[in-house]
Image (cartoon, each protein chain N blue to C red):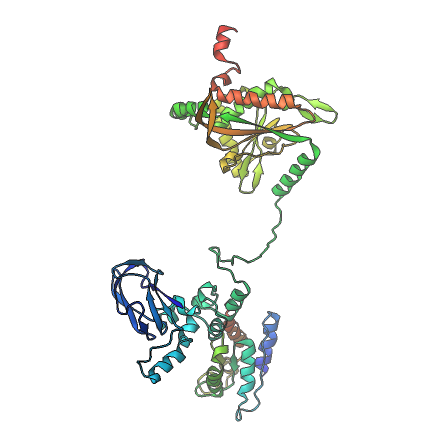
Length: 420
Length: 115
């Protein structure tokens, strides 16, 4: 049983109409006999029987068919009816199991795919050296899956052998899918430092992570309300980083242990907050430092972030700008991370991870409401920060972010006014 | 023959292994040996110190394309003397006759190594 499909007639043509059947379902057809007429946007053409046999149609006259749709099936096991002379039937039957050699050579998937495509056209498509086409025909390789390397896209023997050894499709990048290439590249110094520092942090600290989630609605509201004005006055965009840096700075002053570091057998408390921000550069991750965030204004923070990020991208950061932070903020959310456990930037003892803002249903006052939520993660060194401090710190950050007005003086302005 | 062997040596340095066949006689022409070699390498470069027109190399090319078409991965190429009477001046003789450098170049061409 072989299937006759709607052949490809032209590049832009995706569907054809079945004009009429020249043979009826149940008819016996000879090989190459015209069985149907199809009409495309451009022309009408005929479909021939690929084999002699019993025709079963699969579409009705007037149907619109897509290229590759099933048109009919031919049962080639059915013998020709007695009517035609035996002499005529015998050659047809003998020729039946073997498609013409030319077709086989150029289009190795013989009967199904190449019904009405005239063999000469197919020959033009494939350019191969004689030995290559001989192997293609012999091993039934699909020439389209062979990546030609010869002049003018000619397939050479090596290409066919390579395709046989790697029976995968060719990917867009030109390498085969199942290829198992490895390549080694020298580690850059930056990468080496990153690797060393991260392993040090993992091995040398008692690191663990606590999570919380922040309703970003209030901040987004502030941003959308004052975005233009802020830009107009300060010349920088109002981003999330300033809110986070400010909130962390306030929370750090309240929970000094999070802002401390271990120095030998001493704990070094910092009365200032130098916040490192993780910046991804083409060469790797760098963490430049914003000094004295506690005394910076929002616009100053935004300007500093832009300045540092720009310097990091151009590899213009000085050693001084890269050392001495007391706390780190990393934003995996820009890449779409929903939740992660950041690694402490030693010798600091905590790092805050920002993540993607996602609309999630939240229960508020017994109601389900959709709020823009962000998970925040705090990885901290349990050697000097206890659970109470770390969790309280994170809750405080959450509180500050959800009530941006508190960022001004670190307290509820109304309560401050009322002195309660 | 010297040119062919010299070229093969030169090519070996670059990682191309060429099989050199010394025909010795041209009638009978031992084209079976050439065909067997072509089956291995899928390529043929003929070095002939003779005029190119209607020469032994053209006869060999005909033979091989007829008997071994399906084994060829590149066109058969040949390097012959210039299609002109041979000069007496040594520099012109050198330019007219096949030499190692041009043979090497031709072999690289049939190897699809363009340099």
